[in-house]
Amino acid sequence: MNWNKLITPARCGKEATAATPFDGRNEYQKDFDRIVFSEAFRRLQNKTQVIPLPETDFIHTRLTHSIESSCVGRSLGHLCGIELKRIYKDELREVSGYDIEALVAAACLSHDIGNPPFGHSGEDAISEYFRSSKAESFLSRLNGKQKNDLQSFEGNAAGFRLLTNSYLHDTDRKGGLSLTYSTLGVFTKYPKESLPELRSSGRVSQKKFGYFQADKEVFEKTADHLGLEYDEKEGSRIYRRHPLAFLVEAADDISYILVDFEDGYKLKLVSFEEIYTLLDSIVSRYTDTHRGELDKIRNHDEKIGYLRSRAIGALVKDVSSAFLRNSKDILQGKYDKHLFSETISHQELEQIRKTSVEKIYNSKPVIEIETAGYVVLSGLLDAFLHAAFDAEKGNYGKKTRRLIPQRYLQVDREDPDHDYKLILNITMYVGGMTDSYAVETYRKMSGISL
Image (tube, rainbow, N blue to C red; front, top):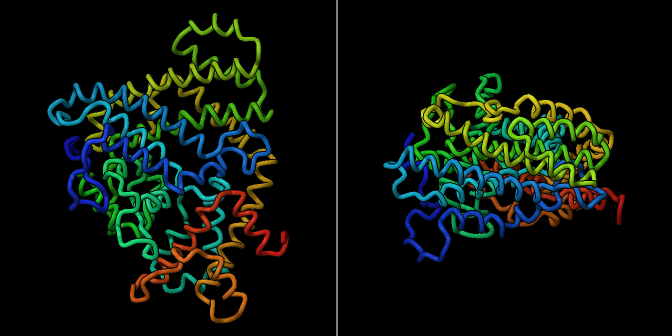
């Protein structure tokens, strides 16, 4: 792949428009701003990061996690951009280091924008509903790949749709937020469709999928603009990642592994001794100058915050070095694994991940609310799908249909994929809800709260 094509200001849905006057921002800073002001990004303030529906105000949400990831991504992009400009000076002659850091930051900012309520358990709840007998009648006219989009629902694919799709009811303009193809490419960590399923391939870019069948044409156009290489497998194109997508993944990893662990400590799910030992061990891999500063800090929470900050700073430099060491193999599609596996503190990071799974993600408060999330999301999907398809069969369906915003109901009736797109629209509506709005809507519709 070639950097000349990988970093381009061309925008999704706006190829024919004239260049806009320079307003002090590069094209990727404009992408960042468009994401910040979007409805979908704003809703992340009430979506689960660690604890669903937290009762305390210091726990991270998807919004704060996304902002922090973008900060880490900007640092990674800055450090790597300087060296990439030196190594690939001919290909990157027209690109500045600020372009690269802004591009990575914008993709990081949007990386979780498609996550449904209740975190990853929300994805499982939606998938489980579509695999149940309740959904059989709705899926009867869908092909195999369309069914799999729903039965293996993926927040990353929902995110790509949120960024690129314009609803027929709202506008004749195409391209959603009209982001640059580069930002869309860097955003897409899993550049493949839902089938074939390739989790066992050993390639991290094939662990999940990155776009629905409804958005396949848009993604392939994006990949063509960027010159992403691909292999053919079982009639599908399996694309190589945009190289900078590895930095987005690393920024997400740095943010959630360390910060989720800190949240677990604040919720008293992890002891001070346990988190202190692991964070200190990470920082000590890179320096011993932090100990003097630690001795000045009396408050335990402040000590942990200081260590977490130093750990993030050290990991940014370590991951940047790992990316640059492997940049040629990444560009050729030969390298396809987590950059974290190359870091000096990989062992400690894996221990933190293991402890988080055991003590935080599988703690009783989390499981209780996530279990309720299955009931809520399944109930909403069932009610709204029946309303969308069977509204004429009774007054209940007619009433329920009025609760669905028109943008999700309007699909071209002549479209051969009408059923699939209508189901996907309803799923995007439910998946786009915040945690509390989903719960409150379900409580009202089921008569629990009036």
